[in-house]
Length: 256
Ligand code: FPP
Image (tube, rainbow, N blue to C red; front, side):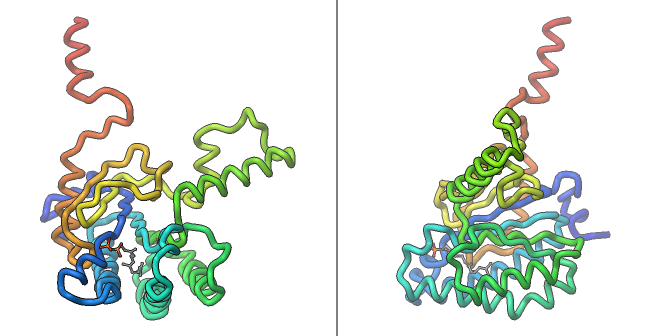
């Protein structure tokens, strides 16, 4: 029997799409008197674990916020360190991810990326494009406002070119123009490190996501903590703007 059944994470209740803001690498390192880079290195190990757990739990999409469009404001050394870590991750792990049937998708702005990084990201997407297992979405040089602005510019171009009528612009149309066009909205969004904000991450897509904020720093995120976040999610009632099941029942009872 798959382990997820034994632990009562019944498949139907497992979120289809989990998105994670991996926060707290710097504080994890600082708490140990280490340079921030150590935290990021340990963070990559937590990424490997999270991918493994997501596959085991039967999650279909895992989106990780690896580098935001605002992270360019960090000191040059740290930016280079993060770029280097992503490069190492793809170089070292691509073959293993591919053989585990993982499909890699990259969201975020591609303009202005170093050509070696862009090349690697494109290669990772191309190599794994026919895989049917977990979809690992890496948000790199990503920011919601930037993504929405790029989508609006594309929409405006299509309207100006006569390919789209302004009257056809519905919420679904906007979703279709985002980087996440064919990816379902996240069911569960987790942020580590105790910070309670979205930081420009999937702001359109997370309109109805369940948000779970956990105190642990990202390098400490492991299978057990992941499972706890899923249990929290399972305890939530998702209403998507409608009324809860209990309320529907009582309304019917009142009207009889
Ligand atoms: C936030 O911690 C973390 C990041 C900005 C980067 C996350 C990147 C990785 C885990 C490594 C590379 C990613 C992949 C997918 C291989 P912080 O530095 O903001 O921590 P702080 O808030 O404590 O300073």
